[in-house]
Each structure stands twice: as C-alpha cells, then as structure tokens.
Length: 119
Image 1 (tube, rainbow, N blue to C red):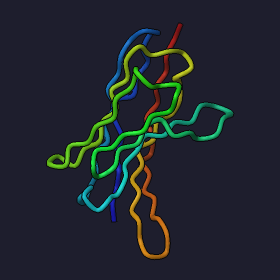
Image 2 (image 1 turned 180 degrees about the vertical axis):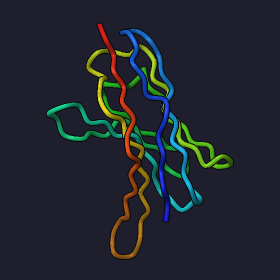
Image 3 (image 1 turned 90 degrees about the vertical axis):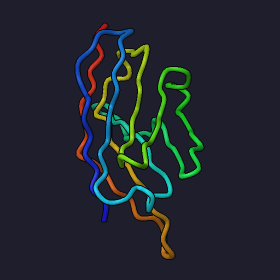
C-alpha cells in the first residue's frame, strides 16, 4: 500500500514559479510510474507530467519547457518544478503512482494541492 501527500500549492502571479512536492509512504520503487495530474474547475483531470522507474519523462504539450518532474528514491519524494506559470495552469494538482500487477494497474492518488495563478 502506498499513500501520497502533496504540498507546495500556493497563489502566485503569472510568470512566477512553484515547486510541488509529493511524499510517499512506503517504497516508491514499487511504483512503475509516478505522475502529476491537474484538474481545473469544470474540466476533466489531465496528465501534466510522468516519470518512470528508468527516469524517462513525459509532459503535456502545454507545460513542455516550463515544468520539470523529478523523483528522489532515497527520500520517497516526487517533485514538480513549475516555472513561467500562466493563469491557465490554475488547478488542483494531484500526485499519482501506478503499479503494474498481473490483473492490471493499481493507481494511488494524493488529496491534491491548489495552485492559483493570477494575471
């Protein structure tokens, strides 16, 4: 079992930066992929960035070049460095972990952290 707790959400002005953190209880080595998702009011949850156990990364087109995902195995932490923030980045950001099992994939979610970007 893995529990995920996000932190670092805040209100910032456009052009600013934030660093989100996700603390995982249990070993994140058991998670094949970790990711950040976000959900804006009235919109579906969307993938922002993902990182595999081999440190391969994927980003949504809307954040490429501005956001960087990273993980620290020793500290059981996942991070999202967000630079050049835009008002459209405003959303609740969720930490996610995925573990492949024989019958499918087990997904773990944090409670979310609010990011608000004002123009």
